[in-house]
Length: 316
Ligand SMILES: C[S@@+](CC[C@H](N)C(=O)[O-])C[C@H]1O[C@@H](n2cnc3c(N)ncnc32)[C@H](O)[C@@H]1O
Picture 1 (cartoon, rainbow, N blue to C red):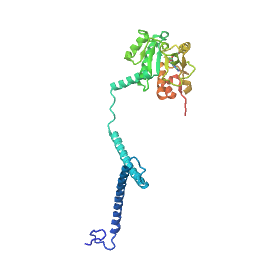
Picture 2 (cartoon, rainbow, N blue to C red; picture 1 turned 45 degrees about the horizontal axis):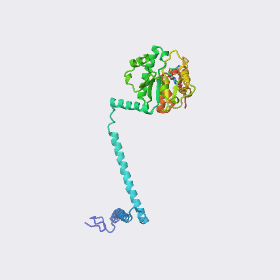
Picture 3 (cartoon, protein in one colour; picture 1 turned 90 degrees about the horizontal axis):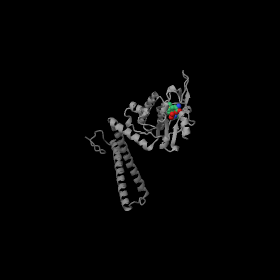
């Protein structure tokens, strides 16, 4: 067997015209280059270490060439680090996806979260009072309906991510409304809200009070957490027109109505019935949705039932 003089392999086809020279030459050249690169980087590293030792805290004491090479070296290292970090993150994300979904919170935990949210609203507001001073103008049936509306209002507030702090003012013990609230609302005595026989006039500074009434001239623009909003605790099947408007006017209070005509239009209906007067729980749904979404369109959509004869204006 003939030994190739170039590549030193036993190759019968090798001779003077051996092309191993070229192939092995290229491989050798590549290896040598890699080796030289690595050696150069190692050298730079050592040089840099040496320079750093000589000029601690001063990188300006070395040649521009060394600095340039050092910077390249650092770039390579940080690119590698970045790549490793990226891969780690991808691995983690994949593992998290494969994991089981988070366990559901227990009923007790959910109750505690709701409780904390509601109590938080006591500190931060906004405040909403239902004025129960007008029950002597109502029938027993109307009072029962009012108690049901208070239950719904409280239920909505409990579900809200941004609850109000609620207060029933003019709530007299052993009155018909007190009895109906206890009879119709499970756990009423444990409701997280204030209940007082006093009037809102004696509880809050006048300038913070906004009486909500469908007959107000001004539309409500914002829900301000520093204000106290009052709803008239009134179910008037035989409509007591402008009842709360007149009361609030006599008490020199600021008034506002929901911005229904500003965002909604009348929709033709068989009964030709249109009303912007809502039940207290519906008004509360509008306030609460607005407070969460900052959108009156959303708020009114949630609160104004189709039976009121209004639909949202087409904004498209
Ligand atoms: C059934 S309404 C009573 C309407 C009654 N005629 C009156 O004079 O207020 C119950 C309460 O919900 C509130 N309310 C109803 N519709 C409203 C609206 N469009 N804007 C503001 N508040 C409203 C008022 O506080 C009102 O007293």
